[in-house]
Amino acid sequence: MTKTIHLLNGPNLNLLGRRQPELYGHDTLGDVETRCRALLPEGFDLIMRQTNHEGVLVDWIQEARGAACGIVINAGALSHSSVAVLDALLAFDGPVIEVHVSNIYRREAFRHHSFVSARADGVIAGLGIEGYEAAVRRVLSLAGQGAG
Image: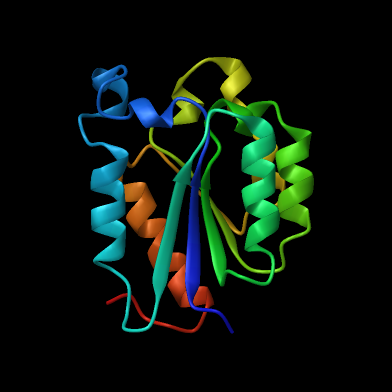
């Protein structure tokens, strides 16, 4: 089994820490990566990516097939609109944990539905960037490892 977790981020998450900090906080994706890497046991790796393009996100999900022990995904707005992202996730055999930095259920009604959730083994919303850490811990648990 591969020991790589793919941490994939969708549109506008490149602005994390700068866009609406009252909603998303001041931490950046760089901070997310540092904190998540610190959890990895010996021999595990993390591939972290962000894109503003749906097709690129689909490509990365497909690349994770056979190459990742799990996917942590914050598809951003694509969570609520992309059947293509869902279809790609349905073709992935390992655990998928969906993350939302904000609590999507306290926001606009259109954010209350997520296509990603239909495939996710777990959904974490509203924990800020700590949600990413919880998601990595869960992937490690499902992969038979403890978080370091």
